Length: 393
Image (cartoon, rainbow, N blue to C red; front, side, top):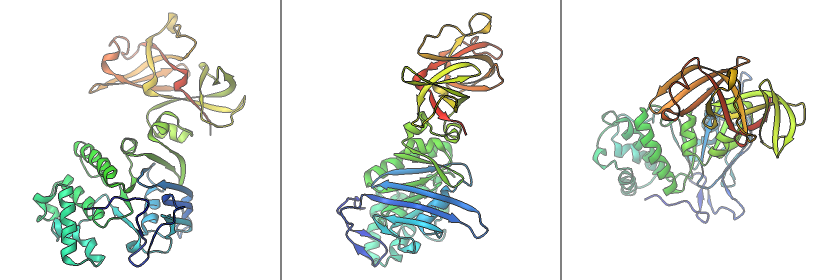
């Protein structure tokens, strides 16, 4: 069985370097001002700082080419670091080769050995570490039982389903008892239903084992569901590092506001504070919202960010204008230009007077069909507290 990671356990940094972690060390993983520049001058990662607590589930998300996989590979030892430091439990590991780092990596294609059985695949890492045959068989069998692979232990990978191969990859990585498990798009090749099922199993497994997971994914929904914290990357740097709730509800930059969720972004200029909220002058009148801690002053370019789910739809007022929404609400008026239903979700696009478009998501039963039909004039409203005011680039 796998041991549960605890602060007073010895940590292995390679096969030959065993020592007790100093009491002052509180992070499983630290990246200090890490930089990666390729030989042709391309900057892949720049000034990357991250501190990961023991047992955390951290996800990296961002567009293709943002540096998230490169960062993971530097932690694993598959990419050399140009500058900065990587530490695991207080130990600097920059020069330590990948096979001696206390990490294990799962790749998108799982990288299973096709000529080996499930049992042999899982035992492989233990054999590399020099464990006696009887001991590695016992450890592998324990992991096989834990991940419910006993029925397929004698099969080769080509005789397994996608979900079974994913479990084998997990078992092979976990059986060597890594301090940190690195996962590079491990669910990307699975179909939607299986992907959801494995997500749930992965989070439960991580909680039970207490191992730190660092997870790279293109699927923001996956990161938001699984993670304790999410790192949003853009052009090799961290745009925002937050809990999933904070990231989704309070984006700190225009990039994050556009990348995470479906937010309405309305540009304008700061007016000042009103009842503890920031007021922004926009082409649609003054709108209010919560600041995100930035020092914004009157006249500064700002963006009002509104989560799609926070928006309510009303019939337009007289002459297509705004109805009375009350002093605690923000409001816009426009015309429905797209109305689609997928399952129980209604997706609307409303065009405002200046040509800007706002996307709204809601349960299909919430609004009458004739209110949200294409061509209808509508008013949109939301509680001012739901808005976030951020600096415009």
